[in-house]
Length: 393
Image (cartoon, rainbow, N blue to C red; front, top):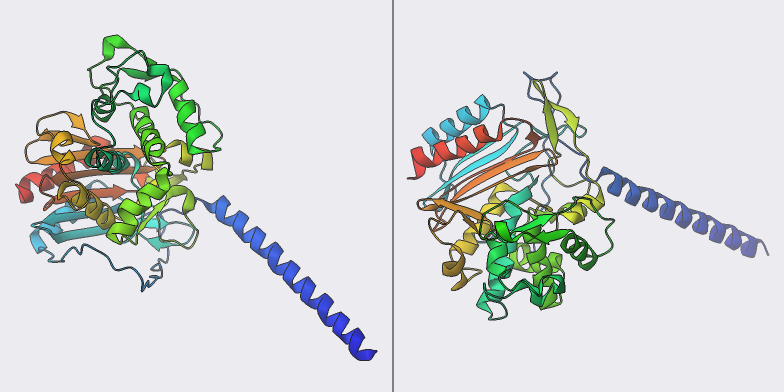
C-alpha cells in the first residue's frame, strides 16, 4: 500500500513537472514572437555611454559548409579606405568589398543589439529590404529557363482582373514599367501568401498613361512572387530556401518571421539627432509577411554576395540572364543596370539601410548592410560608388 501511495505521489510529481515545462515552453515561445525583430545595435562611444559588448556565440553546423567559398585576401589600403568612409558617415553595420572574387575588405561597426550588448560583425544578419527583389527575380528566371514562363506572358493568366490588358506582362513587372498603381497601402492580416497576393492585386489599378514608364512600385514583385507560387504549387519560402540557403549552403540567411532571440541578427533603428540607437523599430508578423518577395529576408553581407554572384555567374540560372540583365537598361530583375559593367540595388525601411554594386561577372562587389536608418541614403550609396570607382574599375 505504501509503495502504491509513493508511486501515486511520484506520478503526480511527474505530471506537475511536465505541466511546468509545458507552461515554460509556451511562455518562451510567446517571448520569441514578442522579441521578433526587437534586438538591435547600440551606439559607438561618441553617440552614447560605453557599454560592455560581447561577441555572439558562433553556432557550429556540421551538415552545411559555406559554398561557394569566398577566398579572403584583405587589402590594407582598401580596408582602410572603406573604414574611413563608413566612419565618416557614422555607419552602423557591415560593409564588404570583393575584388577578383576575393574578400579584400570587411568592416563591421556599431552594435547589433542594445539589449544583448552585441557588436555588429561580419556574419551578423541584417534585413536586406529591397535587395531581396533581385533574389525574387532569380526564382522567376528559373521558370524562364525551365520553359514554364516567358517575359511576354500576360499576368492576366494568373490574375483575372488584368485579363483585358495583355500588355501587362511578366517583363513589365520585372522592369517596373507596368503602370500599376496601388489605391491603398494597408497591411492585411496575414492568413496565407495567396490571400496576401490577392489583397495586393485587388488594390492595384492599371493606369495606361504610365505603362512603359518606370516607377518604383514594390507591388510588381509581390505579384511576381504570387506567379511563382501559382506555377510551382510551392510557397515562396520553400522555393527561396531551396534556391539559396540549401543549394548554396548559406548558413546566415533566414526569413524575418523565423528569427529567434538567440540568432546573431541586428535590429533596426532610426537616427535621432546624433543618437544612433535612440528609436528601435518594431515590425509585426503581418508586416513581415506583407513584404512577400520584396523585403522579408535577413542575410549576412557575404551570404547576400554569394547568392547574387550565383545568379550572374550561372550557378543558378541559364539563358534567362541574357534576357533580364541588359546593360544600359534602367531597372530589371531587381537591379538598376545603368552603371557600365555593374548592377546596383538599394534598400531601406524598418530601421535598415542597404546598398550594393555588383560586377556583371560577379567577381567584384561593394555591399553595405546597415541597421540605423536616418542617415542621408544618398551618402551611403555614394560610399559604395566611391569604393567601386576607386578600387574596382
